[in-house]
Length: 175
Image (cartoon, rainbow, N blue to C red; front, side, top):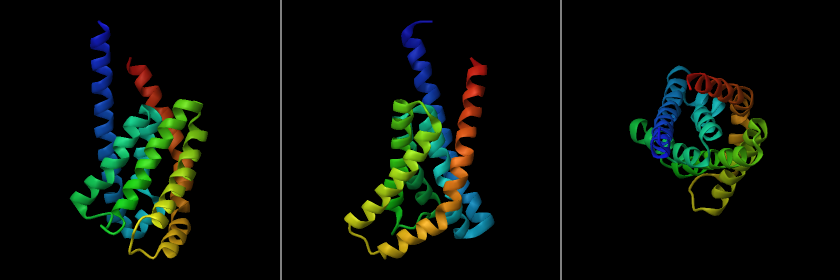
């Protein structure tokens, strides 16, 4: 197999996983909202899971793509997240995808990359809320995001590394 053929396969495989993780990132909030209403989405942050998984597995370009596409596709299909918060969710989720991929590339440590991305991604969301024009009540939104989102963050820290490791093992066994 030539180098060009190998590169073409890698790009196709990456594209496949970007599409798959984007679809999962759109579907998991739909399922959470179906079974638990809007509160389940605010508490468990289901949109973030596969953005983070994709970034940690595929790197920052894929993580950024998944992070930007997910809320836009979700909004176009379901109207969620609401238009008032959509730009901020795009910024937040794209930041998670970008940062998780960059940190994983630099540190080669899933836990450090994940936690660093979660902290900085949330800080970027809060900075965006403060710096960009919005009709959102910023302080209540920020406090609500912290109060409601801690369960989702805890689940991400517990589950995402294991999902990444499981998929990595599966992909290695496939080759």
